[in-house]
Image (cartoon, rainbow, N blue to C red; front, side, top):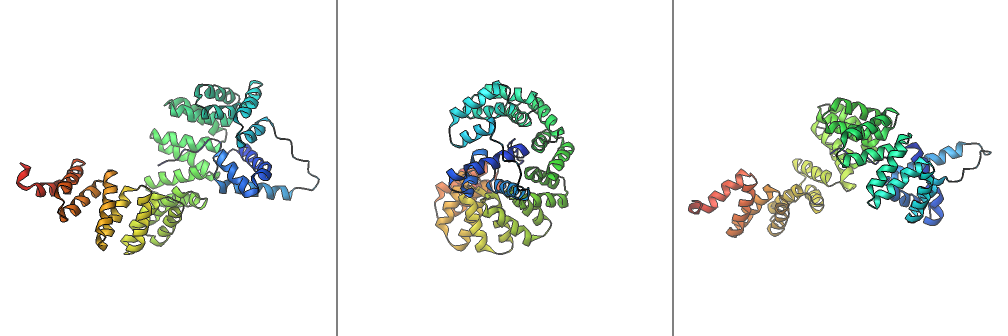
Length: 376
């Protein structure tokens, strides 16, 4: 699945402000790590990414001369961000609204975000349009996202293209997503390459997906690896798929592990599949269970198969039922088989029918056998 990032994620100005929020919030939060966690949650930034920004800013500050000018006081927009961080949303809105009415486009952008949280989408759009028309890139990106949600793709493309052409990598990334949805894969690849080369991990992940789809496994591995090494669990899973397809199974296992350890249920399932193929059934069962407990119906079915092979029939039935109730027709058929062996024919018949109605031919045949003369 392609990922569309938040519009503020890669703005240099946004990074600087986020770092200042961390530094200003350290006393109240009780330390730098705590402030990073709080600000990351508030601004929807990965904590490890924000920590990297803070470390880079610290290195830069250390390298400056001792007689450097003192830092400037926070501007109106930054003051509003601090108020939002403290939960004082009404004060932030008043501050930003006053500044926005006076022509401050950053304040207008922040005001729009607050209004969206309150469900006031029309007014948010109005403020973003005002700011975007005067060149505020973040406002243009937010406006594009809102237009996409309304299905107004042409206008969204116009705004994102203008900011992408001005060098904004976040806009280039979301523009690529829109272009893929329209089938314009070559241009999407061009924009994602540009953003990925500039360090955008979401673009790198999306580019890896696209290249895999187009059969360029070397390119897919390169860009999936870049995003995975930056902490993107989706990319780590995709890299595992590419490596597995290339026969590099040990490294595929390692990347599936990385993604699964980060809570990626599909990676846990893929890891289970690969481990089972290698005969490592106990560890495969562990990862199937992990994925199944996260809601992966295919993993639940596969876990049940292993349990049944071990003789754990009751628990196998439980997991078959879980997967079947989630719509997995293989599990519905397998549950029917298990129930039929236990003599529970009425329920077996019901699950065979469920699977057969979903197009499962083996279940349909099992149902005919079970019904016998009754099928007429």
